[in-house]
Length: 340
Image (cartoon, rainbow, N blue to C red):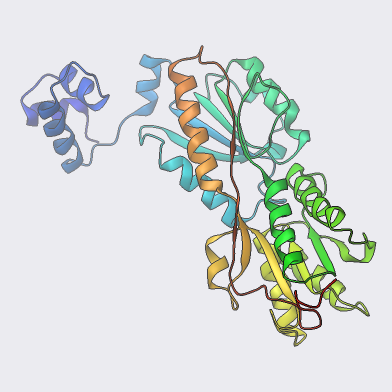
């Protein structure tokens, strides 16, 4: 195994100089640091984080916790979150990914194990975990869910307004018989997106028919099953808003299996704008939630808290955006011109 002493011999400097260069010490000249980094790379040097932790009293580990990995977290959502974090996170840190629902001993969540924690929160049920982290003194940033507590640094998107804009747009195109495939029960994102949907229906005077409210759980399978239920109605909806893109993809497949043309017979709107949304057939109209940007911003704030523990907490909102593609069109039975 290559050590800093091996690198020092090749570079012709002391092992202290090598250590400082690899750790970004400003006392080392840029040219010297660049030369040492090049030699370390060529020798396939791997830092000994265990030994380093003993000296710095740091774990060099960042914890990313979702409400649950198994329930309600799509693979695309997870990938976007990790992608955003890695745009900022130094390679000297290890990122671990876990579900809060898999933590059975909160004492294991402590400053010796984590230098900082990001919580991608979906539910108020996460509050016990969040306040344990805060009480432990671990630098903490909560993502995705807007908190009522201004004492915790928080980054979230305005899901409610994003859905309202999407359903308003469908109304403007002539849709008067909308439906919703809801997200996982108990998740704050599900409640916020449903409320945005209700805001639009109430504003336009559309009757709230319970037959057009179908429960999903953010999975593709639940989107498929929910759409099959809607298609079985005597008067199926003309447009369906799905609380995430995964369910919209499942719903799209149900329509295909039943010979329902999108968007000629049925319009479809998703939420998130995952990578696959533009490649479905037809391409999916959806609300873009910048998960990667939320994670990236959260990681920046966490680093700031780790370096400057007295940094005042902040709460940030990121904007959503309606992405118009080919899965939405004016309803065949009712155009904007002749609609009431």
